Length: 203
Image (cartoon, rainbow, N blue to C red; front, side, top):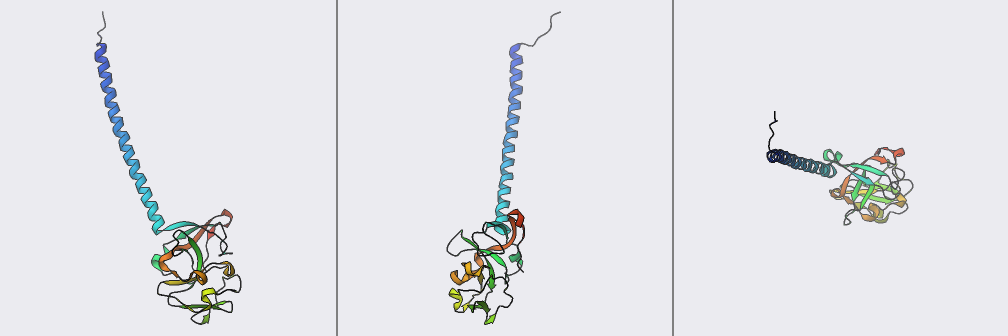
């Protein structure tokens, strides 16, 4: 008996149809995957931007003005959350952007608070005419008072900041008071170098 065969032309046409349907489905899946990935990537980027804007940023110390707390090249996490719930306090270590120099960041310690009058005389810091007795952060007696040789009255949102390495620091004695809006946040954690990893102490 002879086997019944489907004509080759019809067989080929049927295979082509199956392949075409499979191709269309695969194209739809590929397009869906691309869209899903793009949405996922957008969400990740937005979350990263929100984190940097409202939570924390990385900062690298440049210079020795805050020795021995932190050193040149130290990598820090600067957190912003604390100041959503409380005002900056005396002796907080902050990172701020230099006025009129976008992208230039300084790390210093808050010494004078809004509404206070700060003066440096006899190598020491005076707040409202009284010596700051618990100022234990300076490495040595302050040799140069610069602007603070005369009383500096701080405005409603102004802070007087100093480097811990007082005789090797460009701070409010030179650049003047720092406004609250210049703050990037509070130095929180050193993550590099690894052998110095840990929280930044503010007390």
